[in-house]
Image 1 (cartoon, rainbow, N blue to C red):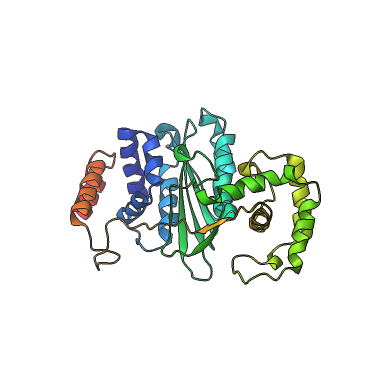
Image 2 (cartoon, rainbow, N blue to C red):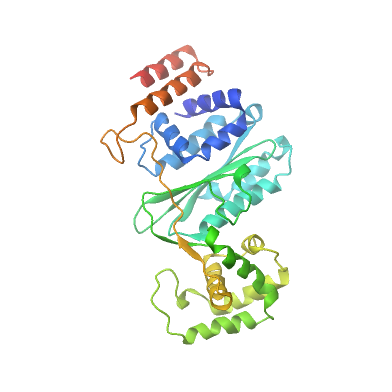
Length: 332
C-alpha cells in the first residue's frame, strides 16, 4: 500500500506537478477514493490516518526529488508538525514560518473557532518547495465514537477565519459553535473590536453580570463553562496586544474554546452580533456502495476511475512484477 501510494502520487507529480497532489488531497471525494484504491475501508475513520501515513512513509527520502513534503500525523506526530517543517527548511525556497503559521491556524480554527464536538487527534500537512500547502486533519467525538475529517487547501484560503476549509466530512450533522461561518462575520468583528472599545476591566464587569441572569438551557454553552478570573486576565492581555482583526485574536497563545465562547457571548450581548450554529460538514461518498448505500454504484464513473488509475500505474516506476500484480487486482 505504501509503494502504490508513492507510485500513484509520483505519476501525478510527473504529469501535473506537486501542486496538483495538494489540490487532490484537499478534495474529500478524491481522498476517499484514493483510500479505497489503496485497500482501506471506505467507512472507517482509519482511512485518514492510514492514507496520510502511507504517503508520509512512501515519499520519505524522495521529497527533494519530487518537490512534495509531508509533516505531522497522529497524536504526538501531529503536534510535532512545526519541527517536521523546520527539518525541511534547507530544501524550501520560502521562509518556513508561513507554513508553520498555516499549520497552527488550521488546527486552531477546527478546534477553537469551530466547536462541533469533535476533538482533533490527527493533523497532516503536505507542502511544496515554494510554500504551497494542504492540510488533512481529523477529530473524534468520544460520545458517539464517530470521526470527522477536515480538508484545507492553501491556495483557496483567502481568510483563515471565514469558511476556510475546502470540505468537512462527517456521517452526521447537528449544531456547531461556528465562528468561521459567513453569518458570524459581525461576531468576529465585534470580538476584534473589544480590546479597543472597552476600558481595561470593563469586559470582566460585563461578564460578571451574566452570573445573576436566568439563562435558558443551552447545551452548547453555560456560565459554569467559563473561569471568570482567567478570562479577565486574558482579556487584559489581549488589550495590550492591540489585535487588528479576529485572526489576530485567534492566533494569540492561550485563546482556547472556552475563551472564544465567552467572547462570542459578550459580542452577542453587547454588540448584537450572534455567532452561527450551522454545522458546516458535508459528505464524502464517491462511487456509492455495492449494497446500494448511500446510493447504488455508478458503474461508468467507477470504470473511469479504474482506467485513470491503471494508466497512472502503467507509467509509474513499479517493476514489471509489481506492475502486473497491481493491474491484475484492478482488473478483477
